Image 1 (tube, rainbow, N blue to C red):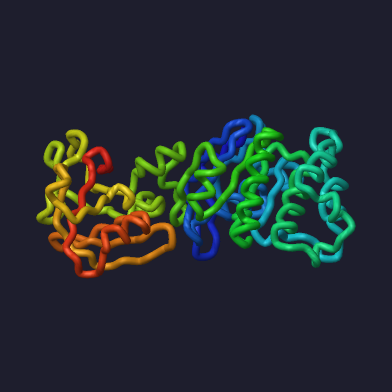
Image 2 (image 1 turned 45 degrees about the vertical axis):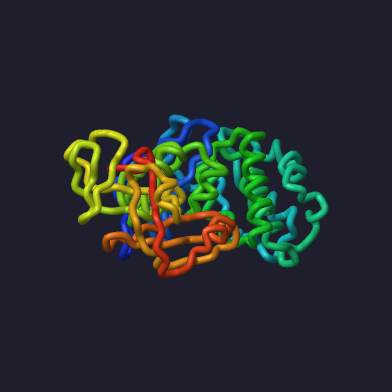
Length: 345
């Protein structure tokens, strides 16, 4: 459906290098990365706002690389909404209809459905200046969808919203995607959004794609230290491997399989690090005594740091377990994790 091949962009102080993304018809694809990684540059290059140095953009098998934005059959929604303050909600939504005509067809056939689905009927004659953040985002979505694009581009559409509005818009996006079957390319720095919305994802860092795959693949099997850290592995260590063991300084841990010489790192998700006070009650091969070095209460869960043999491990445990264990900083505890939860790369 949308193919980005060998995309290279040169800007003052920044560049995209060899970006390759393939998105299937009707797929919800998310490009993940931190601020400044190049996510928005990819979107604006795809829609034709930023000129590219090299590469090809294909929509439905048609090369649109040299076409102006209005001829590329795409809609875009920015995180700051980019609405026209002097126009009503209805005029904002229908603004693009007078300029958009793809293959001789007049857009807008789904206008009534979109307005109804986004619950905008009561707001149509309102000024956008008097709308809440969530309402503005719904108007921006309606405007992008009103022109019947083949591809919808979303630039951090939830980041500017309050938590309650963010959840509402996330639900709306998921329902709209299911009901319309539109192909979506969304960029965000929030992996939670990717979990909820996307089928596949790619992680970008400093203008390069580090990994592409299903949400589960990227989350549980990161291929680089950057991706591992970005998806919340936290416990990432260079290691020396010998069969099914890995040595981190003086600490030897067991993995789930024999590892080849190309492996360089181990990573363990913090929720897989368990904590116990009673060593005898835990029969595990990866069992180590350590000292609690930090406890950070996050409400429903706690971040707990444990130091063992000079190595700091990060654990996440439910707050009620932390209270039951009566954990305190400086306390001796036993931590353990299963070999199957040790990721090597």
